[in-house]
Image 1 (tube, rainbow, N blue to C red):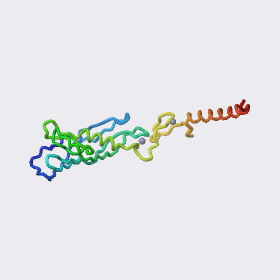
Image 2 (image 1 turned 180 degrees about the horizontal axis):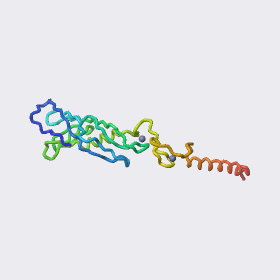
Image 3 (image 1 turned 135 degrees about the vertical axis):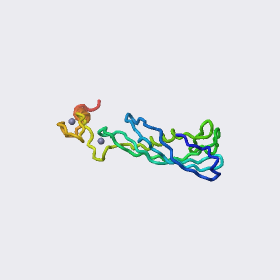
Image 4 (image 1 turned 90 degrees about the horizontal axis):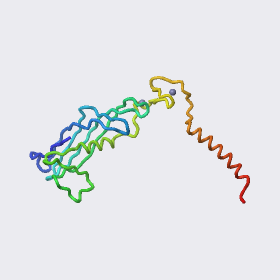
Length: 185
Ligand SMILES: [Zn+2]
Ligand SMILES: [Zn+2]
């Protein structure tokens, strides 16, 4: 995702904008692939400040991933918006460490924003994706997709691990009472 920064036609203080195709196609997100819509584009703005360019890249990209409850395909929109300084090759001003700095390519003509865009896309991922807000998910016992069919599994929501713990707790409190009866020494 190279943006041309060798623009002698743009005078100091001038600006230029345009579209850039997103060539990050897919990435893995805790085992669930995220596929970006083909042909997605972002907008960029470049402001010239002497030999430095102030670059802003923004826009929204549609992506396909899977529902966290039923694993069906779910669509999400990921927004990207960042600003960075593009300094001349080999220059890193000491006072500008707090700012995002992108390096130019070897020939100094372009800047590759793909790693930064990828980072922003990952940050934009929601913590939970659902195919629809009323997704019923999969049956925890037999795996049936409850959005499509029903199963005969019992519906009461007793977690078997919790039931085990309750039994253990009952036994412990029972034996404590017994042990406490004989007192100290
Ligand atoms: Zn779902
Ligand atoms: Zn079931």
